[in-house]
Structure formats: structure tokens, C-alpha cells
Amino acid sequence: MSTIGDGIDGVLVRWLERHEDPRGWLVQIFRSDELPADLGPQMAYVSVTRPGVGRGPHEHQSQTDMFCFAGPGTFEIRLWDNRPISASYGRRMILRAGAAAPAAIVIPPGVVHGYRNVDSVDALVVNLPNRLYRGQGSREPVDEIRYEDDPASTFRLDG
Image 1 (cartoon, rainbow, N blue to C red):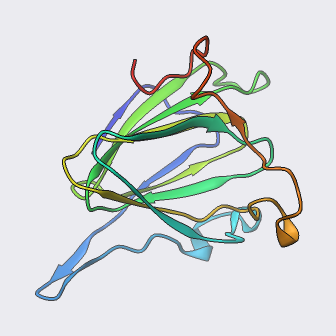
Image 2 (spheres, one colour; image 1 turned 60 degrees about the vertical axis):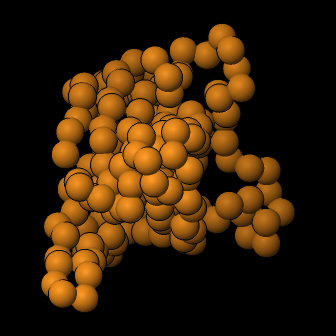
């Protein structure tokens, strides 16, 4: 488990305990008694990211993400506090999480985030956001500000 940079207000990193036996392993990625009620998930999705591939960076205006990086594979996760009223405004964090160091990371609105698979195998991510993607019935605008295609952006996964 590794973290670079000081903490960002509202970002919660919970390193997960891996329980292993002859059948395999498991980690508890969500417990309602460990989060404020307003951060409880409204949906869940699983994604696979290929080796060397990054997703993001982007931020949400109202959504809080709870990403779970438990393996297989390892990710480098980058976070930037982009909230001018935050005590940690401008602060950056870099974490490594995955098979060897499973983690659940809560990312509040206004914190720019992205991740890259830094392993040689496909890597799995579970997200349990507190808002529905595109709202009830998928009829609302997407709550994302995307930076990955902006060459002038200071939010970069490669630097």
C-alpha cells in the first residue's frame, strides 16, 4: 500500500483486509455502518481496464464515487482537490491499490480523479456511486467534467 501527498478533505481511503483460505479470497468493499447515510450507493458497476490504460481524469459536480480496487491487477490512482472553498484546495494525492493492497476510496464532488492500470494483467474496478448515472430513468445530463482530452489541462495521468 502506498500513498503520495497529503490527504484531501473528504477523500476517504480504507485499506481493505483480505481474507484468504484454500477456496480463494474476499474483501468487504462496502458496509453501511462505515459511511454517512448520504454516501450510500444508489447503483454499482464493474469495469475492467487493460494493462497500461487510463480512465479519466474527470470530476463530478454532485456525485460521490466509492471505487474499490481489490485485484486482479494494480492501479495508480491520482486525485486533485479542485474545490476553491476546500482547506486542501490544489492538493494532489497519488495512491497505488489493487491485488497486493486492496482499497476502497471515497471521492467527493469537485475532486478530480483518474486511474491507470500499471500492471501486466487486466484489472478490475467496482464503483458504488451515491447518484444514478444520468439520473432517474437515465434522463438527466451526465454529471462529469472531463479533462482527459484537454491538452491544456493540468490534470494528467502521465505526469
